[in-house]
Length: 307
Image 1 (cartoon, rainbow, N blue to C red):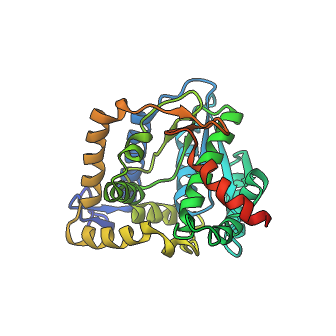
Image 2 (tube, rainbow, N blue to C red):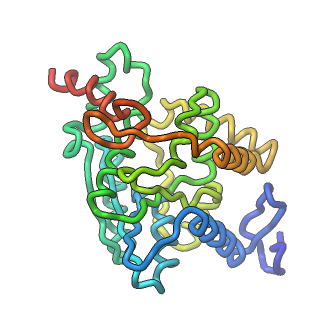
């Protein structure tokens, strides 16, 4: 199988584009998509600090690597990493070690925070406590993890004074999230990411246009330590059901993920500006209602942990 742009051996066939790409042209294609998304979402100024949410997994590792490469020639932009230890026994510790190792190799400052230190309990403890509450026992662990991780990243990013936080959400992640919110009818959550607040650190998603399998291939071709072990809670989530359906649909209808993302972006252009953020009455973090989701969840699980 030859590359569509040269006669070298292709390493990937993009069914959604019809292209076959050799290693060189594939790497260029991924980097082009990342740079285009960065230009679209943020304009960094001299002296700015860009933080990368680094879990140690394949996506965030690739993201940190690429951003370091992009900003290598710009000494006026500082790239740092923020790692959150949610507290998942037998899983998270090894990824924290990988995050530290990569940050050291790239000479990037890493700031490590944990659910236990910041919220008083690990994710494992929260999941167990939630089983004792009638209103929470049906919620997947990913619900607690996602809400608290976003809250912590925003708080830490604000304290560190970063210009933006880059998260490693790839095309698959974005398409899944959009579908989940469509199915739930959660219009507010759909538009929330496009709203700005002085208490909300801007988020950028440089991998948003890159399919998950291409992120992994990029990492392997660059010699990064890639791990495919999934979180033990992953299969309990609603997202996992959406993931399975979307993967099957993408196989039968190449380009579905891009179509979902593009359609959503057109909706945001028309509707996102009408949504306004408030401040949580308890912690002060930006939110849609009187209390943020983190405070709502913590108010229910904390008494169960202490009991």
